Structure formats: structure tokens, C-alpha cells
Length: 383
Ligand code: ADP
Ligand code: MG
Image (tube, rainbow, N blue to C red; front, side, top):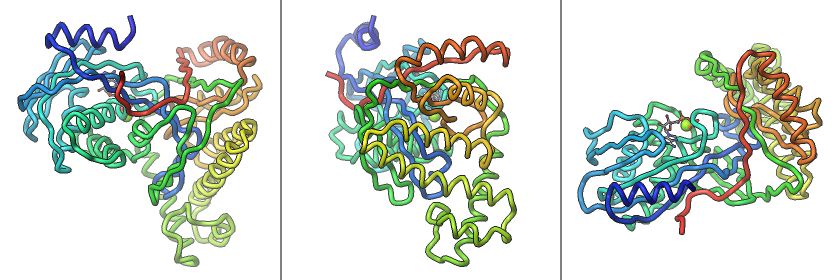
């Protein structure tokens, strides 16, 4: 049975009525990694995996929510002290609270929801969940909160109710995504532009290394510090540099002796990445996916050798992709684990996956996962 039918069936059984159905997507980021906090670009798109929810206002001040995937029912009120225990319910509660904080009306509602974004794999299932409810609550209560503010409602939910200090990209992509399009987002100005991404004859496939490194968050803070150090040194010569992404490569060269060699390498990666994103924009306008792929490999090299946020498993998957003739491959997300994103010609796809199957578990002694993704629509009402 399809996800939507399962949701409808459960909703009818639980609440005896019918509601309206909404959905939002998980996301990938084609290129533009560790650029967000440096005021640079990211280049995400919504994917064909997401969260779907049936919802109906219930005329009370209570939310009644059923998670099909956890097979769990939770009820909560809409005041700050009503924060539920279950993690999944906190996302919904947070979205209600953040809507109220922005002056939106939130009436109690009944809901049943489910999803097919793998949890914690770097495809942002949490953003899909937040966006679904932010969008639906806005529609059903007749609030006229704009889409950007809906994304911020999701982001604030992560900050204030889930303890995750994330940027805006995930919620932005989940809400603004469009089929066959990636979105260039300027993290400094929040300006954005859609680019065609419809690689005929290619597939996008993620290989999840199933590795999670404990070090990730302290390493992340260190990388941020390095970037700030480099930006500060460059700013002394070029006051217009607010963020590292504003700097030119030659300006970094000028401060080579003034910053640590480690900070230099980190900055070299970031400045290179900003340029690669722009090169990908040009390539997409021409439909040149071979150049897109080459930039992805360059990004991986930078993340691995300059920014040093890769790991053995991810480097192995990247090498293997190259050996199998995959057009583009790189680690996606913060690093130290998670997935590689691969752009692969359809006729090489089976061979690539066969090679991963033969070699990855044998070398690392554990499984991996494969997710095919297609760039698809973001938040929407499902007819
Ligand atoms: P991700 O990288 O996928 O966003 P997170 O840890 O940020 O990983 O978010 C995962 C959490 O989001 C889950 O622990 C759960 O609370 C919630 N969530 C995601 N998808 C679902 C779902 N289908 N049903 C219920 N809760 C979900
Ligand atoms: Mg998340």
C-alpha cells in the first residue's frame, strides 16, 4: 500500500474523519560544503523522499499526533510548558510554538504522518518533518507567513526545541524545492536562484558509509575558528571582507606568513569551493554535467586533503567511484561519515554498485546503504 493510503486509513480509524494531506521533502546539496558559515553559497535541491501528513483542525487547544513509522500516539497542548517527551513530537510542537511566536494563529489539530527519508543519513528528515507542519499549519490557520519565514520556523525549532544549531539550508530546500531544479542560495544575503538540474542519462545516488564519528562537533568548531582566523587576517588588508567567502585567492596568499599553515589550508578550501559553486552554475546553464562531476571530485579532494573532514570509508568510496567511471562523487554534509553523493551515467550505475557491494563490506566489515534520489518538489498540498 502507498504511504498516502496508509496515512488515510489510519487517520480515518483514529479520528473518524478525513483531513487534508501535505508533504515536504528531504534534500541533497550538490556542491557548496562548509560554505554556509563562511557567507558563501550552497546548492541544494529537494528530493523524492519526504514526510507526508494528513491534518485536520480539531477546534481545541490540543494536538493529537500519530507517527506511523514509530507506531506511537502523542497528545500535547500548545503552551511552552506542554513540550512532549518524544523526540519526533518535539519537532511538531516546536513548529507550533515558533508559529505562535511569530504572531501566527495555531488551533489544535489531529494528524497522522509518515516518511521515507532515512533518519540521520544526512538527507534531513528532520527538516522535512518541520517543513511539512510549518507549511500545513500556515495553510490551515489562514496565516500569511511567507515561505522564507516558514523555513526559519523549522530552523528555530531545531535551535530551541531539539538542541541542533543548524543553518537555514535544509529547511529552505525542503520548502522551496522544485522538480528538476537546484537552488543556489547565498548564505550571506539569503538571495536565491533556481538552476535547471535534469541530467538525462545520469542518476544521482547516495552511498551511506554508515559511519558516524564522535569527533564531528568539536572538529566542526575548530574548522569554524580557522576560517574566522583567516578572514580576520585578510580583513586587515581588505576591510570589505566580512566573511571568508568574500576573499580572493590572492588575498589569502598575502597573509600566508601571518596565519597558521592549518588555517591557511582550511581557507584555501573555502575560497576554492566558492568558485567551484559558480563554475557549476555556468555548467548547469549549458547542461554540461561532465564539468559538474569534475567539480564534485575537486570538492571531495578539498574536503579530504585541505579541510580534512573526510574519513577512510568516504575516501574509499570516492576512489572507487572514480575507478568505476562515475562522473562526479564527493562526501556530502559536514563530513567524518555519512554519505557520498554520486552523479553516474545510467549505463555505469550497475557496475558501480556491484563494485561497492563487492569491496566495501569486505574492507570495512560493515554494511552500507544506497539511496537513489531524484530532484523533486518541496512543500506542497497533496491532492
Ligand atoms: P536527519 O539528518 O535525517 O535530519 P536528525 O537526527 O536531524 O536526522 O532527525 C531525525 C529525527 O527526526 C528522528 O529521530 C525523528 O525524531 C524525526 N523524524 C524524521 N523522520 C521521521 C518519521 N518518518 N517519523 C517520525 N519522526 C521522524
Ligand atoms: Mg536533521
